[in-house]
Image (tube, rainbow, N blue to C red; front, side, top):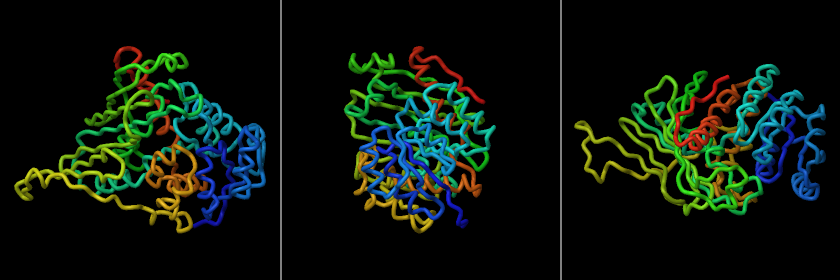
Length: 380
């Protein structure tokens, strides 16, 4: 492995602070700076991790020639503009989900990434979670057979979260359930992309939540067609006024075996195996609970520990705690981004793939607001 180090600035120190020790432990990274508007809170994090360079201005970060890349963990409305500004400044970009909240910002990011040659990677956790990696392995080994249907769901109670969350259209934050459906069917250099979507809204959130985004729905449920495939995927999102334990999940229905995410925390997922003449099974034998292995061995040794529950105990951010460590995905994301910056492998997801995963949700909400009209997903 190369000994070259990528000099990274962490932007936003709520969720972003969970990545600092991973970058610091990685043999190819250096956390050069942190940035947060609140200086006192920034100093607490920077003191904890021994980081000298501290910025309250994002513009000052981008002007620093000693920073190669930014890892953006800012509020959702800032993702698009901050990614655009970073690419214009010649920085590589890792950005938490979603990519942006409007089509024009997404278009600009793709154009700038192509023009500058810098890496853009949306830091989507689910496609590096151990559950996804387990199912991807089963599929690539042929154990699932032909994929017949895919389903993703993400339920989360966002009451009490920062002020840009209240009333957010559920599908604007849909990449956690969209991405595994598309990534599973993707091949190196051949991403599976959604081409159109139909979505319906259901129920109604509290009146005081509706006004900010003019989005009334408690639940948004969509089906989307996958380009060049006979497979359709279904995704469901909730953010407010729905009684449900936190759950980021996906199911893969195959001709030989099917994977179903566990219903509640602390359960194991289920594999359903088809009953055949060669391998006869009773109805009770078709489903089987399975233990999902960890995939830390795919990582450099210094960051392997960050996939494990022991690391979660040190986490502070509610998203990380509710998500159970996001399936051990954070060190995988960190490693892939760094290797992409160093030119050793492509970013996954890259800018066009990140755009498609994000646009499924944006177009789904547009469809829901139009009463379920089919919406074609833009391509750039």
